[in-house]
Image 1 (cartoon, helix red, strand yellow):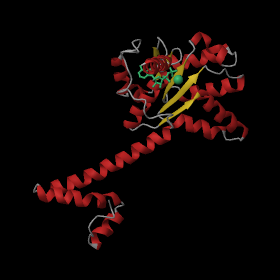
Image 2 (tube, protein in one colour):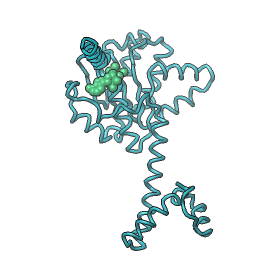
Image 3 (cartoon, protein in one colour):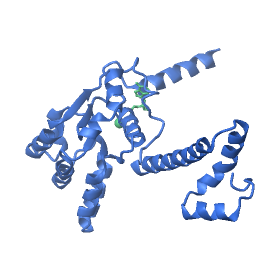
Image 4 (cartoon, protein in one colour):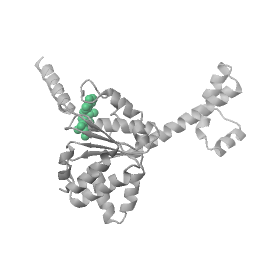
Amino acid sequence: MTAEARPINSDLAFYIKRLRVPRLRDHLDRVTRQATEEDWSYEEFLTALLESEVFARDQTALERRIKKARFPSRAKTLENFDFTYQTSVRKQVLLHLASMRFVELGHNLIFLGPPGTGKTHLSIALGLKACHAGYAVLFLSAVEMITQLLEAQEKDSLREVLNRLFKVDLLIIDEVGYIPFGRPAANLFFQVVNGRYEQGSTIISSNRAFSGWGEIFGGDVVVAAAMIDRLVHHCIILELAGKSYRNDQAKKRNATSKKRSEK
Ligand code: ADP
Ligand code: MG
């Protein structure tokens, strides 16, 4: 866009540079043209120009937040979640969560349920909403988080990594329970939950009911109980039930291709 823009006077170029608003330059031609066509006042013109700068900045910041959140996919949104398929959770509840009041209050959210019922999808969807609302988000699987923490412990940089996990407004820990942890890992997990307790929101998803968490966390029922205690103190628990959407889609695809090949 900049390459095609008509030349501007050197003073204007200087002020644009001084104010560090290079994108203003990109929008100048378009806004000037529209202002001339529609006979805007000076005030309207300046408003439109500044508006385009603010909008562009917001977009850049949003993009940065989404990148930093490290979502495994961006395509998992509330808008494309089929609530007619997953009926064990009401759309209304998710829409309320999407208002981000729970993040504002530092409350937690736990998704429980068997594989393929939408836990990861909904976690990402809410994470994306949080990014849109201006919150710092980080998404990781439990194994990823524990690996990072164990490595940090070895390198004497545990505090640094823990602080990074404490700092975000919304931490999403996915797939708790798929792989059981040893005691050192369980303790590190506890440190994360404890450090975020009443400080920031955490979304956790697990395929195991709380009764199975002792087994996940190094067989240490005391640590598991202490952790659950902190997690559920201010918490919304959503239990997802039903068949695996993944399997169902795969079956449907197979059925369609079978039908096609029979034709
Ligand atoms: P879980 O984390 O519970 O194992 P996922 O959220 O990973 O399940 O869901 C598995 C796949 O099915 C993903 O691709 C997800 O986008 C999709 N999926 C699951 N439930 C739904 C749904 N109700 N509507 C749309 N897509 C869904
Ligand atoms: Mg999952």
